[in-house]
Image (cartoon, rainbow, N blue to C red; front, side, top):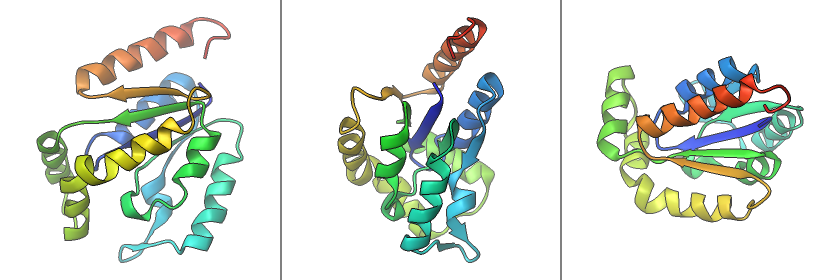
Length: 163
């Protein structure tokens, strides 16, 4: 596990998982929302985002957390470079609650969260499947599955040469 992509509905805990993985493995984590969204928030222009993603995936090891929904023109580049893909497939109520706890979001964000499983997850599954079996894929559907995944990573990190 050297190049990790973490995807999922808003509020699923992608950034929290990325931070925990980074702490366990020493691999630097990048929160894509902080790179992609400009003041306003406004999306980064497509041409600029394509170049930025090339820079991000050129590194030897990284954890890239973020699912930019309808703006994710560079998902294929991230998936093609990844050796590990984690999809947080949490339910709407859990994600909505987590989002409400962290702060206010715009209507467009809520539309994405609401329609994620019906509209965006099927596209995501097709994109992920195109990179099998080269990449290991983990679909985690609840916090217990995340804890087990992190425990497995911690166990592997304790084995010399396994991480």
